[in-house]
Image (tube, rainbow, N blue to C red; front, side, top):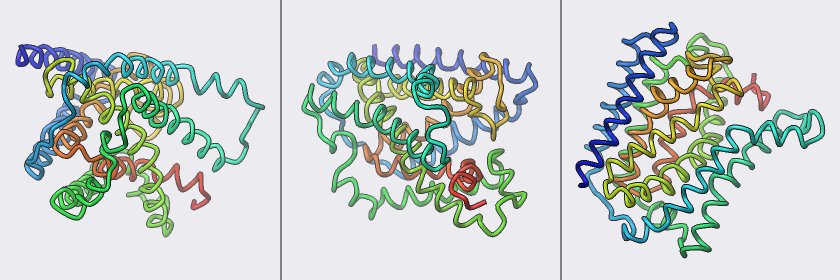
Length: 313
């Protein structure tokens, strides 16, 4: 039964992926060879490297207990999906026009909203409803101490290699390679890394890995099925940003993609990249490791925007 559920989930993911690749290639957005290359690098090579570097499999909480927590987790997912679709526009409509005017204040305001919705609220629900503590989500002294051992070495290797891959091959880093930031590049990269520890690392790893992945795996009785489904949901969560808010400005999909193109890009890029994060979580259950690696993936593509927001360029 476990193998069958994993096979069905893998087949559904593969079907969504193939349809997305065909859509993007047909629209002239991402050629077939580019999608295949990304799949081989981010969907195969880096996950395999992560698995090789981290052979330990820490046990999750009791599967039966985690399975009972799936319903509130899915309710939280529905709330997150609603926010991603209409939340930012609704909040802006309720606020005074142009508030907050300072781009730094606005960035902090948006970050605070994400931290409440993706981290604080899920933690409160699972803490009050099921007695979960920070350690259950990979936030403990033991997890932090592990960064000084084999886990930390693996994280360092991944951060360096992912950074190099983004620098030499990532489309989001093209402005940096062209020298857009000039001498401000080191400061911008450092600030971008720190910012993404929270905005993408903590926000996304906490919700999609520490909350969703294990509970889906427990309910489906298959770690692979849980990882694939959580990864697909992670990818699709990026689609509203691409379609509604120009989130693909530094990516091939652009600032004003069609809805189907935004969905297809979400499946072929962030969903595929999630394989790495899924394995990292399954092998360590260490959220510090996940947010460091995740921040390293997003630091280079986000450096220009961060530099402009905070007055570095």
